[in-house]
Image (cartoon, rainbow, N blue to C red):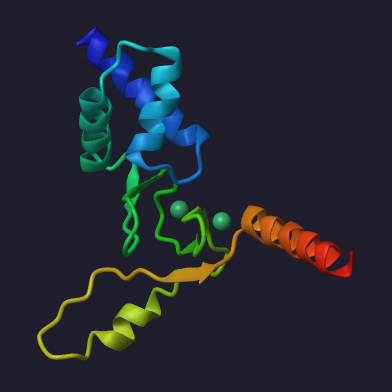
Length: 139
Ligand SMILES: [Zn+2]
Ligand SMILES: [Zn+2]
């Protein structure tokens, strides 16, 4: 029981330290300090933490499932290039469900919006690449 609690705490701490990490990213962070922890243990604890509502999940089409420590409903921005996920500042539009719930027989409970774009790191990288190419063609 004590062991179980420690493992769960390690998983939660790693999830809080990273920004919307995947299960694999959380495992990699923990295993660096605790080489004996198994992937299965990390995944099982992540499952328990989401099932009990301590962690949220972000489902991204064509990407790995991400974990979220911010529980109130909010939107996400995803980088098209590297898949990085961040919270979008756009306020949650509760009324969208009320407007949409006129469709036949549906009781709408929630909705997701994903904003797609290029993250700061990837933008900086492509700017550097562009500069490099321009220098080469000039020289
Ligand atoms: Zn990126
Ligand atoms: Zn989030």
